[in-house]
Image 1 (cartoon, rainbow, N blue to C red):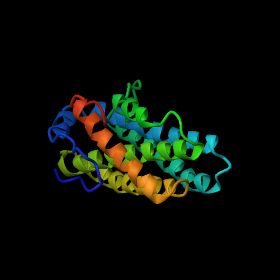
Image 2 (cartoon, rainbow, N blue to C red; image 1 turned 60 degrees about the vertical axis):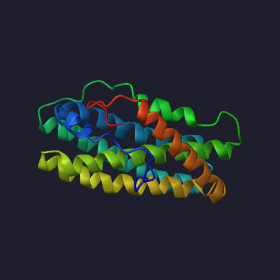
Image 3 (cartoon, rainbow, N blue to C red; image 1 turned 30 degrees about the vertical axis):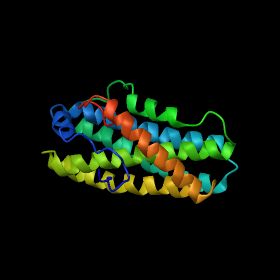
Image 4 (tube, one colour; image 1 turned 90 degrees about the vertical axis):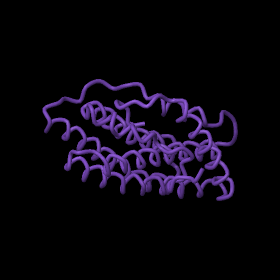
Length: 197
């Protein structure tokens, strides 16, 4: 099977977009919380590793950008007459977090956390691309195209940052392992239109 341009082993089930579009409120709500969690994840890394200047400098603007995305998704809900609604359990993120090694050095665990973030951004980018291409709402098509470009940049940033804390060969080997595991995980998850992942 040919790999996706982002390296993902398994592309999203094509009918996901049609299912998501049936109730766009649900996907927008889940998306809002995904952006909030992305900002929170970067804040957690900064708080855990404040002595790593490059990490702090790299992730600080991403926190601001992810939070700005959260605000924009909330606004998209509001303009359609909807509130934010409660958060949902993210089975995808819970699953990929299991990839993080339990032992290893501090720098190896840091690399794993950065690669988890890269993986989420890559899958989000792929889903945003599908929404930008296929949903009927013209405003949301443009919105998701813009976010697709942004998430692609974040995905590359996390991968590049990881190579500052372990040799590139190690990072790329670990990344390949994560991609393989992520593909297997996605294959086990139901196709749900109320979840971004």
